[in-house]
Amino acid sequence: MKKTVLSIIIVIALGSFIAVFYPTAERAAVQDIRTAAQKDTELDIASGRALMDYSLSALGEKPLDQIQSEFTALGEVIQPLQIDERLFATYLQYKQALVELEPNWSTLDSVAFTELHQSLLALQQRYFTDEQIALLFAEENQLRALAIEKMRLQSSALNQQEQQAMWQAQLADLPEYIQQSDANRRLIGELSQTEQEDRQTAYLNRAELVGEAGAQRLSQLDAQRQQFADELQSYLLARSDILQANFLSTEQKQQQIEALRASRFAQKQWRRVEALERIQNASQSVN
Image 1 (cartoon, rainbow, N blue to C red):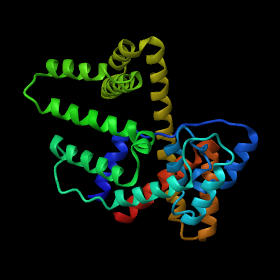
Image 2: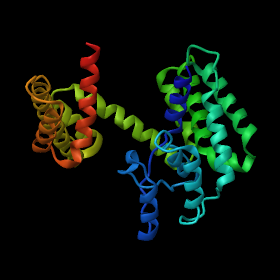
Image 3: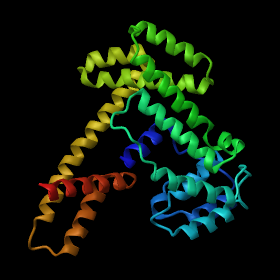
Image 4: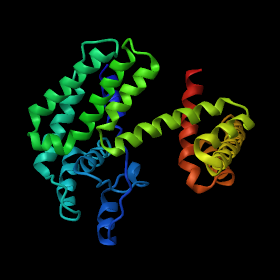
């Protein structure tokens, strides 16, 4: 249940990593503190909270005291974000309390979601000042309240056209980026439906949604995905043959698999392929 709560918070908050570029001297300092899992990312300094979340994402690979000391050092090489080590320590306490949050509902409806929303607001009030809440949680809280309102509309007696009209009225008072986010969400939903259609119908519907150039680009992406899927299937079969070869040592199997991977895929695809290999391993161990 705790994982469910955290998943909801993540989804509603619409968190995302933002690549930020900065002078070479600062980038070098950042690269020194990144963990192996963070090597393909840039330090997220889009906001104070983004920086704190990025730092905490290293938990498990680094001890907490090291993360805290590195965070303190970061304050000397990045632009001020209205945060400091004391706020970081408080934010860590809040995150720990968040994990311990125990919901007393089993079905996620508007009433339960409202209860969760109020619990989160109360938790924020316990640890932060009003100014800090505005700095760290304003967008998340607004989006969560908006999601609650949408759930209420969907469970109301209004027909779909009336619900949409009320929803658009709600969006009209919100910042433009939230309105655009909702429009993008609806567009993605409509585009995803075209994946179930035949090629010609999908192209025509996509052209209506995103124009001819967009439809052509999506067709190219479809072809690339299919090509990768075919190559992956062939690779995984060959990999299975290597793993089942009893005359090879474990080291020899590993060497042959690495050579096979390098011959089939570009280097930038290796991590993705390795992740899919682990999924295959897990599936085979279950079976």
